[in-house]
Length: 389
Ligand code: CAA
Image (cartoon, protein in one colour):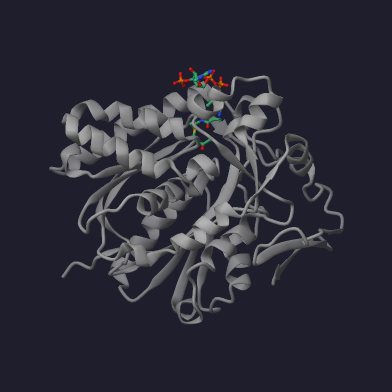
C-alpha cells in the first residue's frame, strides 16, 4: 500500500518591526504605486539584530511543537541562504534551542531560495521509506540587498517551519515532481559579502523561463492539465513575480477557471505582500497565505513552483486534506502580523547597519524591545549566544 506523505503542520514567524513601502517610496523619490502595484509589496519585515535565521526558525517551529511532538522528530532539514556559520549548521543550533532528541539527524541545505524545497522533498522520500518518521523542515532567511539599491524594495525576512509526516493534516504531496537546473549568475552572494549581488531583470526572466520548463516537464510525466488545479503557489521574491508566472499559463484555462485561479493567487500573496521576501520560506508562506485566506475543499490540488537563483527550479503538487486548518495557528499568525510596529525609514536604515560586527568581537545585544520567544543576545569568544524567554 502506498503511504500518503506530506505537510502535517506549519508555523510562521517574522520579527515585530516593519517598514511601510509608501514611506520607502517617499524616501527614495519613487512613485508609491511602483512599489505597491509595480512590485506588489505593501510592507517589508525589518529584522532587528536580536533575530537571525536560527531564532526565527525556532520561533516559527514553536508555533506547533509540543513536547510530545518534539520527542518524535528524527531529522531536521534547515534550508537557508543566510546561515551564520560556514561549518556548523543552523540545524544543530536549532535542534539544541528546541531541545529536540539527540537521536536526530540535523543538517543545513543551501541552493538559494530552493533550499527548503530540497528539504521538503528529501523529507517526503525519507518518510515514504520510514512511515513513522517525522521530519522538521525549515525555510528561514533574511533578504538583504542594500540601502538605495533596486533590490531594496524586495527585502524582508522570516521563517516557515513544516512538519513532514505520513497521513499529513495539511497537504499530501503527489510523488511526481519536475526539476531543472542551469549554471546562471542571476543572483549570488560570495562568502565575503553580507548583501546579495543580483542581475535583477535577468533574474526575473530566468525565473519565468524555469517555471515554463518545469511546468511542461510535470505535464509530460502526468495526464494532468491546468484544469486539474485549484491553485498555483509561487516562490514570491515580490508578489508581482508570481503574478507574472501565473499569467504565463492562464491562457490555457477556461475563463471561469482563470477567475478561480486568479482569486486563489490573490489569497496566496496576501501575507507575502506584508512581509517581503523570505527567500527559502517565501513559497511556503505563500502556501500558508492561500490556506489562511481562502477556504479549500479536501482533495483540491495545488501546484507549487519553487525557484532558487543560480539556478534550480521545481514544480510539484499536493492535495488539500480534510481539516487542514487544524495544521496551523492562523490566529497566532494574525496576531504576529497585527502587533508589529512600523519603523521610520531613518530607523530602518539604522537597524540595517546594526549587525554583529564582522571582526568577531564580543557583543551584548539589548533584547528588551524584541518580544519574540527566542532571541540572539550577543556573542562571546566568537560564539553566538541564544536565549529562550
Ligand atoms: N505604477 C505602477 N507600476 C509601476 C510604476 C507606477 N508608478 N512605476 C513602475 N512600475 C512598474 C514597472 O512597469 C514594472 O512592471 P513590470 O515588471 O510589470 O514591467 C515594475 O513596476 C518594476 O519596475 P522596474 O522594472 O523599473 O523596477 P526596477 O528596475 O527598480 O527593479 C527588480 C525591479 C528587478 C525586481 C528589482 O527590485 C530587483 O533587482 N529585485 C531583486 C531581484 C529579484 O527579486 N528577482 C526575482 C527573480 S530571482 C528570485 O526569485 C530569487 C530570489 O528570491 C532573489
